[in-house]
Structures are given as C-alpha cells and as structure tokens.
Image 1 (cartoon, rainbow, N blue to C red):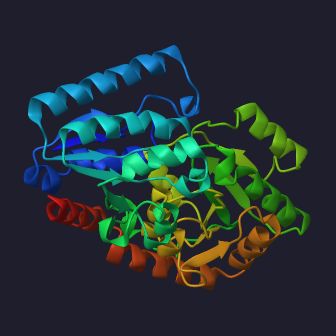
Image 2 (image 1 turned 120 degrees about the horizontal axis):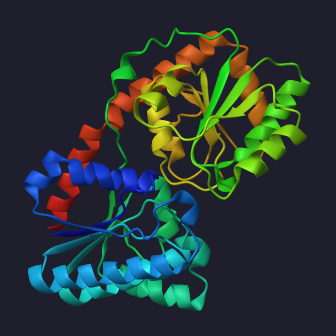
Length: 359
C-alpha cells in the first residue's frame, strides 16, 4: 500500500491524523505501507501561497510517487487530497498517476469545497476523473453533500477522527476560575472566526460581563500586528490576550485552566481541537459547520450558532459564564460522547476496517 498524505510540519488537522496513522501499530501491523508527505508547506502562513521552494518540493512528491508506483506496484493507494483550489489541482496529478498504476484508489478528505467549485468547467472535468472508480473516506455523514455529485453512497466510508488520551483527561470538571476563562485554540486564520469572537468579546465587555479570553495558535493569514490592532480598536486589551502557539503539556495546561471553549469557525470539516476540548470536559460553543454537530450536541454538550453571528455568540457565552452548573453538565456530556466515539483507538479500528473492506 502507498499512502500519500499530510503530516507535520505544519501542524493542522489533516497533518495530525496523518501522523497518527504513521505511528499506529494496529494499522501498520495490518498493512505494509510506504509513506510520502503530500504537503509542500512547512509553515501555516505558507499554505495557499506559491514559491519556488514549494515547486521544488512538489516535483519531489511526484518523483517519489512515481518511483513507488512503478517499483512496488501497490494494490491500494491512499491519498489525502485537498478538495478545491490550487491544492486540489496539485493533488489531482498524484491521483491521476496512481490511477495508471493501481486499480484501487482511496481518497480521504479532511476538508470540503467540492460543491462550491463543481460548476466550473475545469474543476468539474478534474473532479469527474479524480473520483472515477475511487473509494472515498469522509469524516461525517454531514459531509456527503459536498461530494454527492461524483460519488455514490456505496463508495463512501465514514471514519470520524480520533485523538490520543492525555494525562489531563482525568481532570475534574468542577475546577473553576474566579473570572471565567474563554479559550480559542487554532491558527490565527480569519475563517476560524477570530474576528467574530473578538466582536462577541466587545459585546460582553459593554454589558459588563466579567471574562478573560485567551487566543492560542500559530500566526496564519491574520498577522500579530493586525490582531493586536483589532484588540485595541475594540477596547479589549484588558480582557483578551494572544499567547502564541502551544503544544504538548503546555497546550493541555491551557485547556485545564479554561472554563469554556469557543470556536466560531466559518469553514470546517471535523476539527480535532473540539475533540481535545471535549476530552477535557469543556463546554463548547461553535458553529453548525461540516461535521461539528457530530462532536458538539447542540444544547447538550455545548451550543452551535450561525456563522458570523457575533451577537448570538455573545449570548451563548454569557449564558455559560453566568451558569456554572450548566458549564459542568455540558462538559461532562461532551466527555462521555468523546469516550464513546472519538478516541484514537476507535479511529484506528474504523480506519483499518475500512481499508480491509476496500482491499
């Protein structure tokens, strides 16, 4: 089997799942897999931008793919391709090469966007060829609508993401802060709802609702200067801060020290960060986007609001700030849901079973 997939750096959802697959004893003991990194970016802020170095990396990807296809003649080729934009066309070439040498192709989507591009003639032409004869892995049933035009239900397999258990997963959900701590943990990318959350924070401050909101993550398409300028413009410098990226134990501590996780994303599939928050018994406020309703049960383990609705976002945050019992109850329900469906062990079992069925 040949796996052409993303893995760190940079750190993002698809890359982390790729890392989990590469390090899985269960998966690698069942299948003999050669791995190729499909990513051409090494930093988050490189994603979506071209450069000579990225072209050089891409040529290397094509060379390594051809080498393994010709030499090993794999029975199955697994590819985590991008769903739209320049990244899709780049990854489609890898799919086309694989179709020449292998009868079975598995496409695993960690993003969406096919439906928004399928009406453009060139995209449509490429999509038809890419999906022809391919099996498709989606993260949620909610995401089938995105590829419905090209893939029949019989060729779709649902495999939600899972994450490892942490030492902090035994944390008591009764731990409270004197001032309720809000946490946003993701790269500083506009589509993640950074500015929507800042606007909600301004609404809360104007209503004199006490809180502190911490932003953690790498710089993305929002620069640090731009973020700070927006914070100052909204008069939030005393209740909002940016703490940079955090990993491992530092990230776990950030979750442990928080009371509410807020992620008002505008474009998402199945964010791992919501699994991390659920594992640590945090109530979540997010959006009804992609597969998020599988993770956050609306009005049970958290709240789902409409995208770009800062007023409704502020209302839900205020409700949780002023009701500690509700925070605890929602956090406990979220943790139960995580333990039942979204551990790394469960992901590995589902993923292995899907590959066995396809082979």
